[in-house]
Image (cartoon, rainbow, N blue to C red; front, side, top):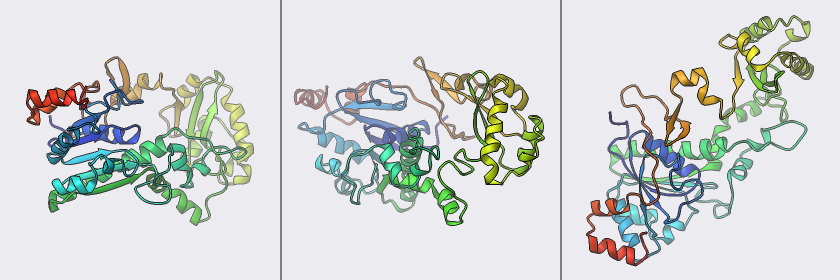
Length: 375
């Protein structure tokens, strides 16, 4: 069964991090993706990369004679172009938005950067942690008595970057179907991470935000956090609502009057200390036997080895196996046009096939090879 984006043709200029992840999301939903690879495998997104699943690969060097014209011919027939370079790189290659949209007015031109296409930092180097740092979100993460804790690059690169790039591309595609006109999607990780922080800015404006590590969702609240068990493994508790909090107390046989005042922040530190002692009295599996599947809002904290084997994830098919690698399956789940993960590819695996489909004869392909444009 064809995916929801079947018939959409995407040209991806291979980069690292959020751009290929966004393209993976489109490919999982059925888009036809041709990845333009460097002739050598790149960091993380080279041969057989899971994030690079579902593409065909053309390894071509746009700096070599004849290569740019080949790429422009591919773009002429595409619905989407995705690139993840610093501002100006595509322009210097002769593949900027003005050139591409001039040739293909309906093209959606997706651009993924850390700082965005404009602003004082646009040309500066950076990584996920830096982009997150200027949004206010990083300052809010971690313990109160030390510097902010660098999170995994889920909130920045993947959440603030890739997800918003994919969302913007699909929005622009939807609009282009009506207008016949494409446009540029300027997706900046710093912008997206800031938007993901909307609820916390609302907390701040309403006076509900205290210092780092002193709030509900950052580990300050004793009823929302992680605890160490007797075997050194961990559990998570998220009993925010009063009825869930009461159920947690009942199941854990906590009758100390200290815990009746759930929202008295002055009591949170001592409440947490007592819960730390309590949860160290049993192993993680023993707490699972007592609390798992109840209204106490409980789950064991699993590592990357344990998660794929967890019963709920197994039942949902949350993880899949491909080429000997375990990795997450596509989401979200569409009832009529479900997503499907494509195969992992090698750089340049489909170069000759793609060039032939483009109409190049063997002599033209040999000339590109002679010029060093293709491997």
